[in-house]
Length: 446
Ligand code: PMP
Image (cartoon, rainbow, N blue to C red; front, side, top):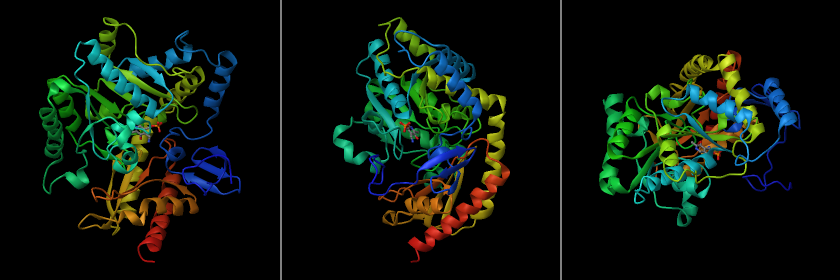
């Protein structure tokens, strides 16, 4: 027994003692190929980069901590400049926090504050999407459409309206073009706004590429642009959750660049600090900040570790390395290679229904029957078993289970570091293939 609580009680995971590049080693000397950036799409530039360690050391030697309501600090300012220079039009102000859930909490509170400042306090409903995940705190869980994650807490959560996700594999009609599907999926927002009355709706929130709950389901062409138009037309704020898909993961600093759609508030975390420090951020549109400046003049937000100097110094160095080493181009390039390898190996696999995603953010949906798309019985726990078998094969992947109502199947998500080599890509696919076949042999044909 250890005193540390892990998710699976009674089963202590291996102890990691070394991490370098895409490889981790445990205390027993076993090695693991990290195909999912530390397990949660975090370690974007790989593990153990001495340049980030040097930046952290240097910052610790200068200033460890001073609260953001007393001082600003140099790395916080430099990181905000770096992000604002690259952000889509108008998203030039940055609010820091310690991770994705905090970022989403802050986004919800900010949306609420904006409507109060604009004299429209009745605008308070949030519209989100089914089968989504925005964090584990109560506010973030309230807008999460993934039922298994939120159900036990429902009585403690605020009411949210949910529309269907943009999830081509299960929702696009046969013969429907991607653009037509994108427009049809976006129309669900219009219908929900009509039903709720726009005067009561504060914001719509979605992930440009759904990660944890749908195994990398990207927005269809034109979907987010149409969503933006609908929000503008009804005076509703648009929040993009790029906690998992942002910070270069899709081959762009911000995933929404590819969709040519700009939100009012954009949340990031994970790849921002690349795992070297816990950090999250909201990029906030100038318009929103102007509203507050000409109103109460004070943000109704406050976390102790906002703009933590060491976290900001680490994240700044991680973001600089992405630029210096040309990692975004590399993500696009290696993402294509990984996708081709997955298609070659699993394209005809009887239990792989779909291979999808963007950049180095790729997912496969695992199904009982490829032709009918029937998911596996969720009680088989295919995704969780695959994670365990893959660990045994020395491979880290991110599983996500199917839902009981059959609206989606099990997925496996791959999100290796942007530094992944061609040889590592081949090895990921070989180990994944072995792990999947072993999992299916054990679970389906015992
Ligand atoms: N939003 C999304 C899209 C996420 O994937 C996650 C984490 N998986 C979160 C929010 C919550 O982030 P954190 O776990 O850092 O609080």
